[in-house]
Image (tube, rainbow, N blue to C red; front, side, top):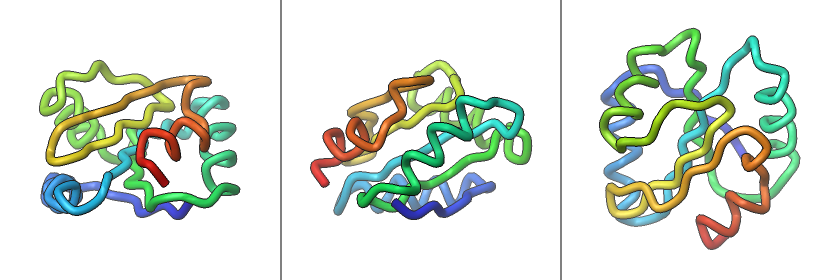
Length: 107
């Protein structure tokens, strides 16, 4: 899977807009969390969709926007799959696996 770091609300809006044509994966990452590094390494080693990465230390307002827009409490690591503008899957901590992402996105 490849990662695209997003830091602005406009980038999130564009990602959500693209969820009407294909599933979108949002990944919240904390540089101070060892589990985040484990989760990201696993995702990078697997085939699958592009992941829109939010580094919470760099983009806290964006992370908060995701939480409020989709009514999903913040965790890290965390993946949220968006289809047709709505969350259809979310997982955190050890639930952030390549298999879970592929299953949720159908890839």
